[in-house]
Image (cartoon, rainbow, N blue to C red; front, side):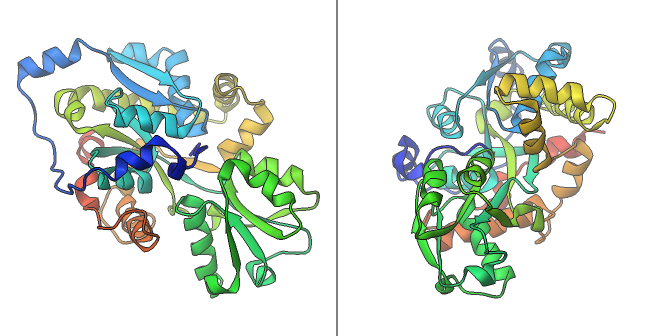
Length: 342
């Protein structure tokens, strides 16, 4: 996910502390009159330059959104947090957000119902080390920089656990993700944890540096999701189902070897990123089809389940004091739309 600004320094953080109501319920269908009134206004959905988010641009340009008949407007945001702030301000009907961040918003009283898993990170989140360091074992006793409380922190903790080490084996430096490429150049910093496209910037900043661990080794650790405002879900339920169908059509177009190049060209152009670089970004995430959503929205404690991944990140958020009380994960995942579709 394009998480380009620190939550700790954004307006979001202050809003998160205003409430703690974890009693979200599965939405009830509204009256015909309420549905009709809501349908007269466009759904407003944010998107950004991240590959799974750009799938919506593909659907727009191919005319599939128009064909669906859904009254919807996609609003482009230059960074991830700007979209979150707009969602918090009730300017949007949905939010494209990492599952852990959705729970952070929920802990502050803003209920977003996850109706679709858009992707899971499969290499886009990485630990990059300087020359001569090839593993976390090699990194022991050295300084690692990342932004605490974000998915980079989650990735590092997971890598440490997988390597049977302790966080006490490393010197941790807290730094804004947007500054990590510059921080990496510092002689005292041996490794950084971040995501694309900032990861490429870090690799270029220090000649001979390399990736020593990535989310590809832990599929399902980090999901990006479509989280919908509860009222919008209540009044526009059928429209959200239609958009999931459009999403699946666009993902299949991207996955088809015959049309993949065309899809990437469309997406890269809107993102303003060179095609070769954007292709690498696409390779770093696994963009999910409707069929895959049907499987991952079945309850399990495994990372292959959106539920299992969400239980894991909820615990991470608690351990790192992102919020103080656990959230009811099950009440914030709404699998019904996906499961009802053929």
